[in-house]
Amino acid sequence: MKFAWIDVRSASSEQREAIVDAAIHARVDGIVSDDPALLATLPTTVKRILVGTRAEGDDLIVLHDVADQDALADLRTRHQDGDKNIAGRVDVIDDPTLTLACETAIALPYTLVEFKDPTKIPLEIVIAAADRSPGQLVCKAADLEEAKVIIDVLEKGSEGVLIAPATANDVFELVEALRVKTSALELTTLTVDRIEHLGLGDRVCIDTTSHFEKDEGMLIGSYAHGFILCVSETHPLPYMPTRPFRINAGALHSYAFGQDNRTNYLSELKAGHPVLAVGADGRTRRITVGRIKLESRPLLSIHATSPEGVEVNLIVQDDWHVRVLGPGAKVLNVTELKKGDQVLGHIATEKRHVGWPVGEFCVEK
Image 1: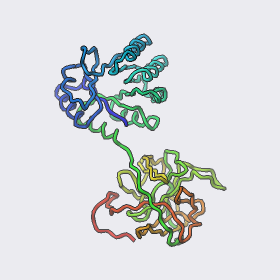
Image 2 (image 1 turned 180 degrees about the horizontal axis):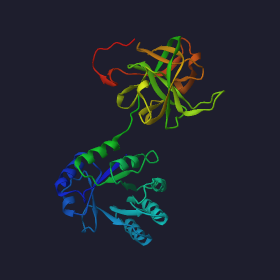
Image 3 (image 1 turned 90 degrees about the vertical axis):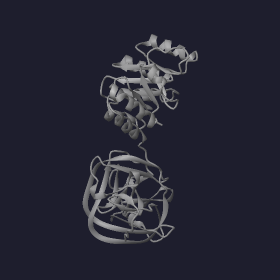
Image 4 (image 1 turned 120 degrees about the vertical axis):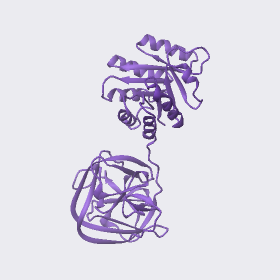
């Protein structure tokens, strides 16, 4: 679980109290200050990180600058002697200090790293070095935008992000960014009722900026209450190379089931739009559209029904190489589907208005 540290040292006197209150309310992991009196007022639900020297008996995490190997050796010894509330800060400006940051992250309970250059490659190296260490790694961000990038470095990012917020709103925005995650979906087995050849229409391929796993795809459907799991072009085809970033999704009117229980028309997706990858076991992850390809092709309509009797429809390109997933992540060519075959899908109970679930009367057929 990723966490936030809030540095209040540079906050204006007018904003500091509001920032501290916001940090406590948002349940940030820690507050950084050089004022022991301020830290003493904080509840036990938040870590108190003091920049400087602490008095004996203070229950504080003390942040020390680690400028060289001697400084690290001293802190390592103190930690081995029983100091569990010790943190090191490394300013990474070159290769030797990058090595120092890696060693600090392995040796100490808490390590704060700050990078001179905008590239995130040094951060990737520190994250990899500290991956098996029990300590926690925190990376300083210049602002909220950089914090959001840091969160996603190497998919999992550093464990913690530190910012010096200008206002209380910055605190809430950072915490919200840390909370962004996708929940698993309950998939169901749908039974194919009939297949219809519809003739020419417009279909959409979704090219994403991610590599799909072999059992992953996207939930697409003609109705907002039901979707079929369309598989990516990760699996080999006899006449063309695999395109593991692509979903041959469906006709342009179709819905794509996305994050936060929202749908989007395929026709309105575009480069940079977030979408949801879904595995055959129901796991999900947020990915990003890199390109949309809308082209006229013959279309095929798949009619299926859930065990509860909910009717689902998917209209796709009428071609053998277009595929959906069945139970057990079985890859099924759409032109070979027949009555009685089973496909994976998802049933949503809510109706929709501009993609959002609403509790209102609505009939789709």
